[in-house]
Image (cartoon, rainbow, N blue to C red; front, side):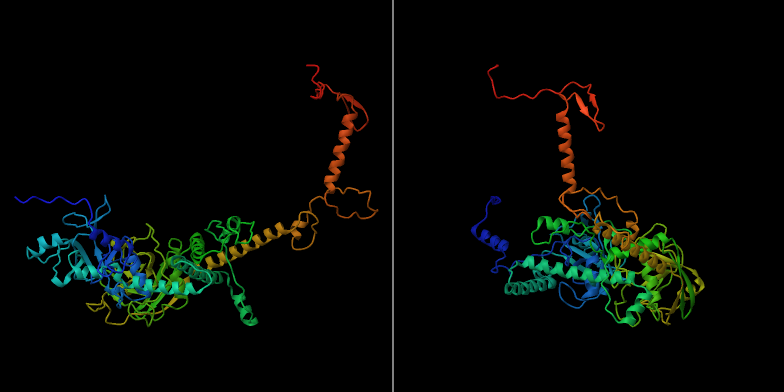
Length: 592
């Protein structure tokens, strides 16, 4: 009988050298060692994902991370090839509620880094896939010759099976190798260039320090520009623009601080604490508020619009008829502000409804002339967060809601429901409802469409939009006046602090406060000075107090044993209190 070999409790010299080269990042075995990405991590952020999506190659991303990347670069971050949001496949992956691990919906086994995992595409629509372990797929589909999805019951072919993880497939492991990712390699090259440029400068920084400093500088400049633009939009008025255009002078920089906003707390700049602990910063004794960011200014404007408690109304003229839309500005202020300002600037004029699905919805709002997935951005030039409220749901026909490609990706596109869509609640922000012209919407639902793209065969577009009720402008005007009033109050407070306590005049910038000047102390006559107006003497009140104390001391010494006290009239009053104890000294000890 063959004796079973025991497991080794040590490493050989060869194994130790190999592991050491891996840990140190040596180039001798760097090319042969494969470091595949963990299964539960996004290939772009290298952190655990929450809403998994994948490509046809089987690389998994987080939807919240890959969508902005594709909108900006339009390149696959792993392979470097051209890629759009149409190439993304949504993964329906089961998760164990108790442990939080991803698992197979059939066998209820958790997915580890050594598990073979596959995804089966659902056709139609083709952009979704159900995730299973390879064991369940092999036993229940391949062996049983059953080409039916185990969850949805839809038929599929071999081309619809996508391998997400296979430790035995060397080619797939190399594709999931972190060292081969395109965005990682480009980041390494950028770090190398920064290191070379830092070596030529006077101050030698490490790679990490120089990268962090440059990133902080870029973000700071970007925040300052965005906050300055938003502050100009908030504080500008027609008169100011006319004056500036007529005079031709350069506009002054407008700053809004956190203590001037409606929703923000008083966040300081940190210069006082920094100057206390750092010798490179100038000494600052006042904790002043820091500059507000663009997002904080927008949040303050939305809060003012919400407190106004007014609805908006827009009449949308299409080539099929007109429809009246009521906007919930008091419930979802940010979404309605974006829609109203885009409509006021004419951004929706000429926009086509590019998607119509009967018994579902009608989608439109793309920027005229845009191609592909580039349908335009919001009024602020970037996506904004969702706004959900239990009072606003996709119930009934004529509900106007925002179209998005994931959480926090709202832009300018919107859709109108043909019937109730409860599965869209808390996924898309409802901001309006059609209150007039529902018969026009029913006619649009009956129009023929393309079966593959759902595009209407006949052109349906927005000709113009007429704003009937716009509480956004009113809220912005109220917020503008409130910020200017707050700035004036701060200016008066600073002036009152800078004005000295004595010698205030009844006229000047502080005329209102100087009407009641503080009572000036009595002047002390100095015998050494000539008669006339006495000059200002430093410490004259201290000298007067010292003279008074000396006078009281002489009067107390002249009293008899402290039993009599001299008053202003010269009379002596006998004290009822016991006499104070006599002072003793320790000069002579002979009496002891």
